[in-house]
Length: 406
Image (cartoon, rainbow, N blue to C red; front, top):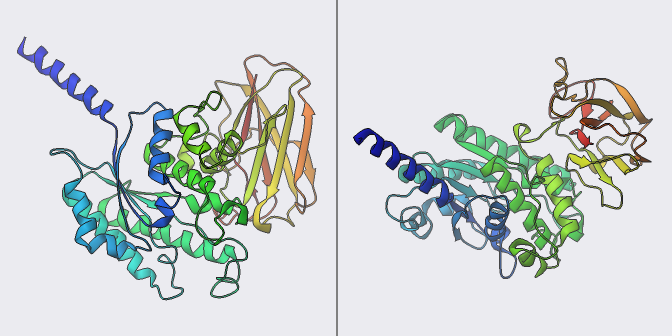
């Protein structure tokens, strides 16, 4: 009887812990809190709830123009670690957002301070919460036309590459100290890169985020913390639920949601993505009937459904590469595995839907689905005949694959 009571009590404690929601500490500056009325953490919370998770308990410790060195040493910020949770609770994650230039060696900053600041914050948090995970909020390059170009960076791509590379190194540094899985990169800047640093996604100063970019940031942080895709979430926009209502206050609607969800998932870790490709500046988007194309991987179809596919070279990287749309068909529940030689190739064959000698203009296919295949799926993947900067493949680069399910 005693053993049964202990087991019941343990079960109740597990249920209570699961219902509590994650405890998340945010360190950041105006890139995290910029939008009037709400910021990234508020949107992150509502995304988690829309996905069916208990509402996360988040705390923001902010400073305008702040750096990780400041958050690691200022008593106001270090005090948030020990003074923001009920007794006995611990942090699940600490989100670290460095100054826009802090992860670079440009304009008065030293990237060494970024690395040491991230390690110091992790040490502070782990002293209180031994299992907390570091989530690096990878920031973005400024928009085209901003005064950082052509000096100290010739292009947004150059600024992006420096920031991105150093955030990845920060993750590696934390993992070297605390073990594999102790840190993860929320690749917000990668998603912004797939928007091609278009000024419409920024505020007028060309570096602060618009509300839509704040949504992209919250999505990337969600995938990093929960290790789940955003495209699987289907918020209610008609009638509007809590998330849609909040976004509507700043003019962000359903079209932006699906567009940005596709980019956030495309920039998530490969283990989160259903059919991951190389991860370079090569993007496959799809849609059915009158929907707006996006990078979410799954579409439902039937005979006669209008299918739209678009393969694009982003930021000019693959414009001169010959390119193809590859296709295979399989039972939905049992897709063929990736190529054993090139794991970034997800299609089970090299059957070609369409090709082009280059990608100076997007490769587009729009056709009605000619057949019905109940229980089957059609998988499409973009391939460019150019070396991948991400995988090191000297021959080819691929997009994530998209699935059309009957």
